[in-house]
Image 1 (cartoon, rainbow, N blue to C red):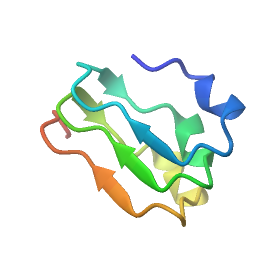
Image 2: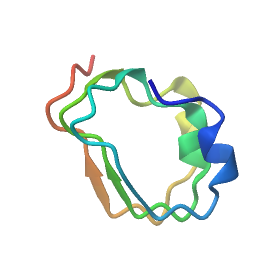
Image 3: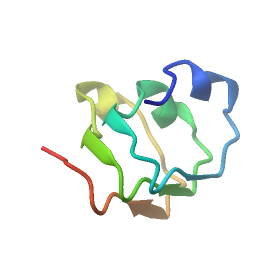
Image 4: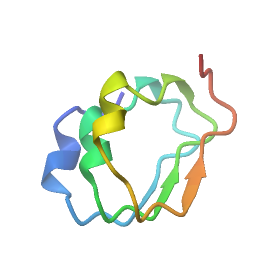
Length: 74
């Protein structure tokens, strides 16, 4: 799993590739506060939930690449 408080300390994060790491569970809400994120690669994991209910209040307007292939999304 990804530590929940990790992304609060990375507000200028632009690229994150966690593909193929056998991550499970859901993505921490703090990730969606990375306003400068351009590329988010989460393919080939065991993620079951990506978009928490609160996502409607957050923006990732810089996001150009989102790869969620080969997960266990509900």
